Length: 347
Ligand code: SAH
Ligand code: SF4
Image (cartoon, rainbow, N blue to C red; front, side, top):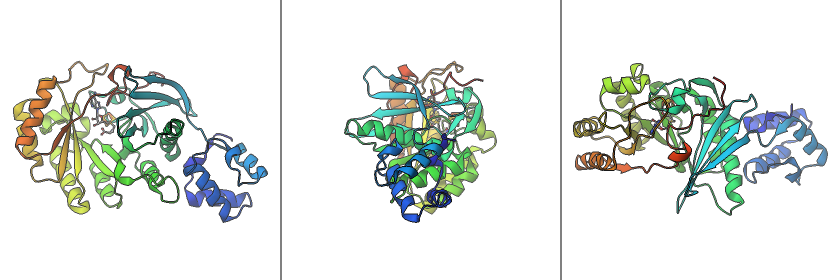
């Protein structure tokens, strides 16, 4: 039983679990604070809790549900990827990117992904299962502890690892609530970004959650047919409807949407493609993030050259679309966007 995930419990569930152990409400508060403010990794650290309760908790719950199986560092040591084993022997990957002023963590929400984007290593491996709330959170907690030992702090979290967060909606929302809970981790919602391939009903639902979390939508083409070829989800949620849902989101929340666009050589990186994208997004409260496609095993096309990326960015900027070019990070350790696909999962 010791592998039940204490991070799967929300506060009410923790109160209930402690109630069953004959414990009063204030114990739940103390444990909550130990879990989410102090990030204790052993029940012996809960010094304000009687030892028999610590033992009872340790018999039931683990504080380290993820077993790091391997960690890889990029040559410049700025990007670090960890492969975490899960209780059922599957695994997921998490990536830490260090910048001068910030430390950003890219977390996974599913083992594999059913959406099958052709250029994405996670899509290429198929789908196993969604992560639980606790498994999503444990990736963050692991790296917060890790940075703490260096006297550093995690500053940003992006839901851009393995999987489609909006296909694991409830666990993803619960993890966001836990991260931003002012009585616990108190992580700033504005420093969290959640990325979706464009699951329209969930974009609509998300816009009503009243969260200050940033939303990114992976576009990759402003041409409906081309998008259907490279992002199969577009056949179910076509571009026109997706863009309407995005406009509605910005109008309801007054929040800017980021559009992710991976530039693929001679496919979606031309000047006409840039003009078409600018037309599609005209007047929307948005921002485009460009990145040259990262390599993946089962996709033969290449990322665009630096010059092509810059020319595409210039074409958008000239048309009044705010745009940034993202640097590729950790490619040599397969930690770049869409490169996460653990070879450890039995398929
Ligand atoms: N499923 C979500 C989030 C995970 S993917 C989504 O698709 O948005 C995170 C980002 O990496 C997405 O923008 C995705 O399109 C992008 N991506 C996937 N494969 C890539 C690759 N080979 N090169 C660059 N970006 C890639
Ligand atoms: Fe899934 Fe996102 Fe990869 Fe598409 S890009 S297969 S939605 S993880």
